[in-house]
Every structure is written in structure tokens, then in C-alpha cells.
Amino acid sequence: MKTAYIFPGQGAQFVGMGQDLYNLNEESKALFEKANDILGFRITDIMFNGTDEDLKQTNVTQPAIFLHSVILAKALGDKFQPAMVAGHSLGEFSALVAAGALSFEDGLKLVSQRANAMQKACELQPSTMAAILGLDDETVEKICAQVEEVVVAANYNCPGQLVISGSIEGIDKACTLLTEAGAKRALKLNVGGAFHSPLMEPAKVELQAAIEATAIQSPICPIYQNVDAKAYTDPQEIKANLIAQLTGAVRWTQTVQNMLTDGAEAFVEVGPGNVLQGLVKKVDRQAQVSAATIAE
Image (tube, rainbow, N blue to C red; front, side, top):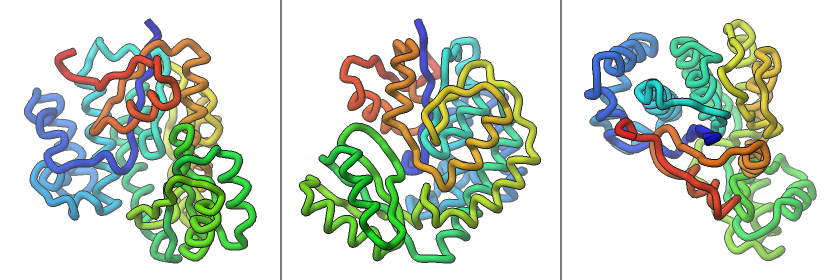
């Protein structure tokens, strides 16, 4: 059976995440402790015993989800036999480490740098995102293009659910126009800034040098990358797509469609939460989805 392993992004975090993995065996525990050393603070204390507020800080959230996903993938051992992998936004880094393209240490360092760079970009200009429900992608794209402020389609999550990203004024204008055009809901999100939009350019510039200096190998299977939803195994192409990812859209709907076309028979979500399983089901009701568990 061709299994696609998929890795979640920001928003999947919860207090207590990873505690079971930490207690699982010495290998998992050692990876968490190595992460504490690399980051320079005990992220495990926040993951296991912090508050929701503590976990929401971008510099904590992103490494926390990455660690949960990657250590879980490693804990699966020989059961981890991906025919293909993909990750939603931040999850792309988890997918690359799980598929052997990035080392654990390099992946964590990049995720930490990415989180800090995004935080700085958010502070440069107040910006936000909004979920648009019940309209087709083309209509949303067309209306965003009419707004004179910065506002773009950012996350193609599933048919009928597209997240837009941009300046606060741009998002407000777009939400009004999209509601008038028949959107069931135009819901502003509680996020720090306009991720996956041109407003992340300062973060992209900062992260580009770090990604270019990092060794990336050919993964053990194709990785379907966010920027164009296509499958890649070439390290240079993977790098270029990772750099483009911060200001480009997350084409998740198209990624799932392409994986299905290429023969994916089952989707296994590796990491906290079950958001991606729900999105896969909305792309294809017949798709077989499950969460990775150590006992499977």
C-alpha cells in the first residue's frame, strides 16, 4: 500500500504535547534534551507543563510542533515506510527531517530561525489573516486582486476553505467584499501576522542565507512542497522551494490531489492534532486517514 505521511503546521499545539514520547524510551528522551541544548531554553518544560499562552509564542510553537512530529516519526522505526511525504507550512521542515533530507539538528535550527524571523517581520508591520469559507478559490483570488492593499490567497486548505493574508486594512476590505460575494464566513484569525504573503519578505531574506548554508540530501521518497504542490527529490530544488515558501502560498488542496493522483492509498498524520486528516477528507471523502501512533 502506498502511504503518504503528512506533517502538521502551527495551530496543532497543545499543553502536554510530546510527554508520552519523552517517556517512551531513552532515544526519544535524548532527542528532546538535545533540542533543549540547541534552543538554549527548556522547551520541554513549556510543552509538557506550560500554559496555552506560553505555547502560542511563535518561537515556542514552531519548534514544539516540529519536535513532536519528528520524534514521533523516528519512534515509528521500521513502520515508517513513506511512499511520499508533505507538510503544511512549518510541517514541510518536519517532513524533510523525517524523510532523511535534513538532519534533526539542522532542521531544528532552521525552524527556530524561521520562527524568530517571522516574529520580527510581524513586528515590522501590523498584519493578519482570515479564513474564507464557502467560496471557490478563483472567486477569492479575483476579489483579493481587486483590493489595493496587500492581500493574497495564502493557505489553500481544502475546497471551500481558503485563508487570505495581508495588511489589516487589506484583510478588512477583502472580508467585506468576500462576504458580499457570498462567502459563508470571513473569519479573522488570531495570528501574529500575514504569513505566506509578500509581507514576510524580510523573514524570507533572513532565512534564505541559513537555508542556503544548510546541507540537504535527497529524501528517501518524494516530498510534495507547498509552493507548487509538486513532488521533489532534488536537494537544490527543495532548497529553492523552502526559501520561496515564506512568501508563497501553501497549496495543500492541490498537494493532496497530486498525492492521490500519484497513487496515495492512505494518509497518516504525524504530529499533534488531527487537522490534516480532516482536510484530506474534505478533498476526497473516500481517502483513508489515520494518526501515527507508536503502538501501530
